[in-house]
Image 1 (cartoon, helix red, strand yellow):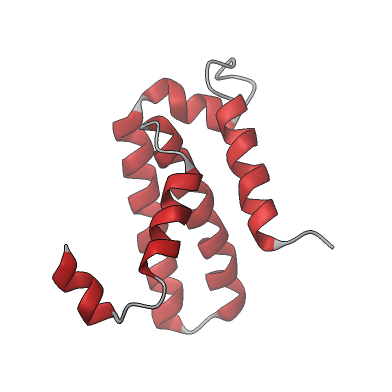
Image 2: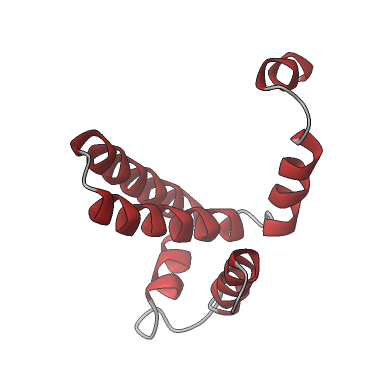
Length: 106
């Protein structure tokens, strides 16, 4: 069984491999071709769709929209050259801190 983290790592690697590919061959390549701002906009749209499904209480649709959010977050990170490992390192750094303590340190 594949771990969930390796699934995210694998997806991020696939996303990175689409950089510079023919936009007609891949949705990811099409997003990259439109630039980082469009990648960010698309992430925002997907986040709003997830929020709507969360408010409605539809677990199946929320699960699907959450997958879209994670994918588009990874695309947005890649578009701005932020490795997934940097985000995971930041999450690891925050572990063990209360949310209040962590926010105070920023």
